[in-house]
Image 1 (cartoon, rainbow, N blue to C red):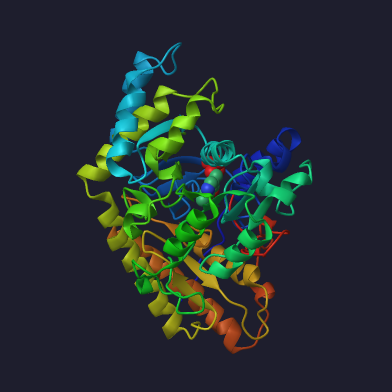
Image 2: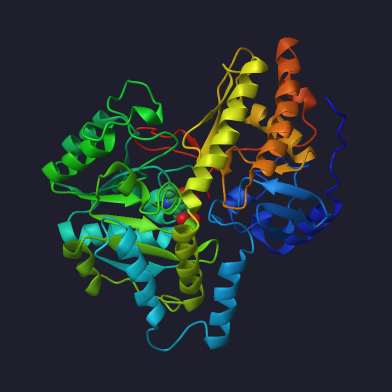
Length: 462
Ligand SMILES: Cc1ncc(COP(=O)(O)O)c(C=O)c1O
């Protein structure tokens, strides 16, 4: 194994010190701050990005797998998106009445998304999930909701985690979490809150996709169109008079241009979109069946930057490029190479019981299990992250593949993973403590779920 030098992060640390004096936590997003990236070995400030590469304020260059928390489907500073945005800037960014771009992008959503008879736009993913939940409450005249996954920073969701300060407790009494691929956890909610559940809001894919039986294999290939978790959830919603909302903020335009609902042919009543739809320029959307989405005429969803044309211009350029360039096929191909390579390396370095690259190739995740004396996956993650950082790979456990990640980037990254796995193998073989090899502070979870079924014990999301 080549000896690598610790990277210099002097300028990052100077800026961080400065930021901390005036910016609480020093970052605008939890999962972009020191909790998520091992302090002492990771850059804290990036200066520029192009394609799938970024440069930090100390001049270190990285292949990025975080991609700004996943929206950069095409890559940083994509020429086509930039051109569309620059053109729109010269025409005006936001107006006093509507702009035709709102119709253009709504038409693209209606064309591609199965549930979309219409659309309205927001800025953050949480705008879309919040209005979807509000709409379901308005339509059903019920207050309780069931959820599965991460849905944003608003009270009803984050109130169920340990980051719930400032959130009135009643929120927790109304929001109930269930476990993915475990239909009985949702059945229990429906029976406990009979005729009270307004909607089920869920990420249609978490890491792996829907499976036929809760206790069966969790391989995504086990999907069965007529007998799977998503179909069962839909049936339960129908039976209980609740709306089904798919939170496609991550899956949308990445797993399939029409989202997970198109992949699995399970059409929800409403769905939420953001991230990849506009390649990192803020935009989100709610879509849905006509009989539900029409309630937006009288359910309040309105803000100054609704219909902001910069995000819309970016979305139009992004969606057109996804279509034209077969972007999603590329994500699966290149992401498949990474996934296969990583699992091969885990095998040859005897780490299969600890480490696996799981999920869909377009956004795979490294799962890290407790093993022997190594009972803290976050410590194992911190070591891998540290070794990757030193080898020019910016990594936070998932692989947000973009159109800009090419085979060469994947191969370079696999070399870095190989070195990291070699180091871990040596530690495990010699029964040593991983902590002794950490140079920085281990990364932490952003929050822990505290209510209900403990469906997802911890999360690294925003
Ligand atoms: C599945 C899912 N839904 C909703 C959100 C919230 O989106 P935003 O952070 O843009 O508000 C996220 C963010 O990570 C997400 O992953």
